Each structure stands twice: as structure tokens, then as C-alpha cells.
Image (cartoon, rainbow, N blue to C red; front, side, top):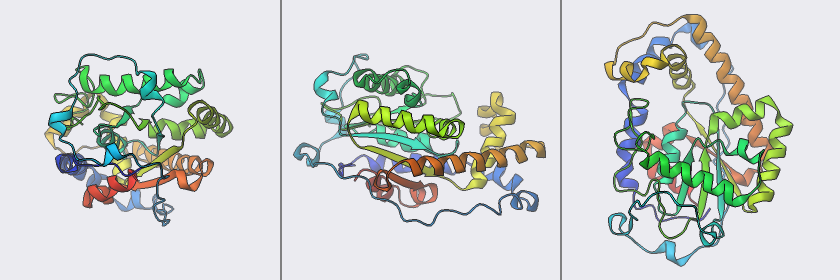
Length: 309
């Protein structure tokens, strides 16, 4: 993927930090960070392999030019299918893999805010590939999802979203929009992709082959990795308190949970982690990249820039 001009990064650094450092999550992690939990995490070892650089594509002079988001951002005129001229110019297809509550949503939203990148929010595109290999259909499904997430009034990328107690809207950015053309398109559905591999690895490999045949462009797989305590803590809360999750986040109160729920979510974490590693084995090394949450917090500009090479 070519290095794109990420002039919008100063606008979104604050959003990244807020998303990852909500007092709610800090409190709940400390609640379950006990010796009993630690004994179940001893087998966790974080991969020490360096980040694999994204695949390189042809540099386009137009994307090297400086531009103002406010002056070039297209106005929303309602969803319309992508013209063939836009479809034919797309160069890279993006997929995510990993555990739920790892930060896939914020990473996907940041990428989607670029004027030449469209990243859907949980379109579940691989399931659709099993039904059809029509490139226009697949691309338009991703584009429509991105648009609706920003403009439908109930998507996570709308400014007043209350679906999960927070919004992933980035002021002044091109979420749900694109400027003239698209070079990168994809789907943020990391947890489900891990599950699909775990359910039937052979079928998953077959689906990836179908996707490659349909789009005939490089694929980029991002594995977003978060501290396992955070993954498990938030998974426990969503398992036990999902209907009240937004109110609980706003209250910033400690929560008491059944230890059996914690134990089951620990097991689920490792099940999905092993599946994510399996997915990466299916893909060539040059098409995979690990994105660590702590690195995104400490230096978001560097991490996003590496992803956009």
C-alpha cells in the first residue's frame, strides 16, 4: 500500500487516546487483575516478530499533493453505487483479524477518514464472498456500509452515536466519503474472521482464494493486538452487562462479576488468538502486519503511517 498523505492525523490523536484510556476500562481491568486470573494467563506470550511492512504499490502524483480536508471534502448527497472508473482504480484490499475489543473499530475508522480509503465497519465481507465473487457487488457493499456508518444516524461513525456509549466520528475527516477516487478498500471485522477460520480452516482458505480471484489486487491483513487483560475485562462486561453497557461506562463504577464468566472469557480469548495466528499462516508474510494498541497510543502517527505504506 503506498504512503498516503495523512494530514488528518492531528485531528484524531485525541480520539485514539480517549478510546483506549476510558476510566471505565481501567477500573474493570484492575477488578479482575488477580492472582487467580494471572494463573490462567501464564501461557500467553506476545509475538516478538517485527512489524511486516505493507505491500508496496505504484506512487500516484495526485496523492502526494497537499490538500485541505475542509476545502476538498465532498458534500453528502446520498449513497450512490461506485462507478466503474472508481472500482477499476482500487489497488489494495484490507482485512482485519483478531479478538473482539482489541481496537479494530478505531483503527478502521481512522483509515476510513482518509479521502482515498474506504473501510467498512463490520460488513462481514468474507461471508458475502462465499455467496458471490462479483467485484462491483463486493466493493459497493463495503462502500455502502462506510457511508451508512457515517450518515445513517445510527452508525458508530456519526457524531451523536450512543450505540455503545461512544462515537468514532472524526471531525473534518472524510468518513463515509471519498475524494474523486478510491485506492484502498476493505472491511473491519477482525473477530468474525478469526471465528470463520476456527470453524473451518479449509473453507476459510477457499474463501480467501475466491476473494483473490474476484478482486485481483493485493490483500493487506491487519492483526490488531491489545493487552489481554483489557480484552478479557471488556469481553466479560459485554457478556454480562451488554444491555446496560453504555450506562455502566458513564457511571465509572466497579462491577462484580461471576468468576465462571471470567474463566470462560479467558478460554475464549486464547481460542480466538490461536485462530488469528492461523489466519496469518494462510497469508504471505508481506501481506500481514501486527498493530499493537500500546504503540498506537504512544505514537499514532507512526503506526498509521506504517499501515499506509
